[in-house]
Image (cartoon, rainbow, N blue to C red):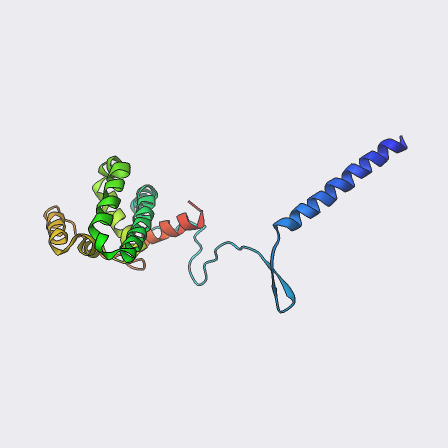
Length: 196
């Protein structure tokens, strides 16, 4: 009986020592001037803003419905806006390395995007397209018109703008997170914080 208890004690002590040793292996630290400072990752904190874990309050059911609909749309197009921002950064890095290959780099990126996401983009509604344009402005800091003008030239940008105006839209639409696009900003913040 004593031998059995000793084995159990040995196993428990071994498990405890192993767990302590493995826990310490995940601890990150930095030594500065002889002092050891632990490094730990903290979740994002909003200072001075509203609490994004709570849904906004609306005066009418219509506004609440609009917010829920906007949430569905933003969740659908936000990954495309992130992708556009990432591809723009890659393309600009390619252009910085070799300025003569500007057209070649643009065509390469455009062809890859059309091949991979062409069908999905054609499946977006007009409202989702508008939201995508606003989110691209949010991610890059440039309106869609400015991006097209920079990457494709003035003539193409003007042609696309004229086509957009013909259908009652604009590529020069600026993203206003504290103004009329507050719902989109609220939803994007929730997505970034992992709430949605």
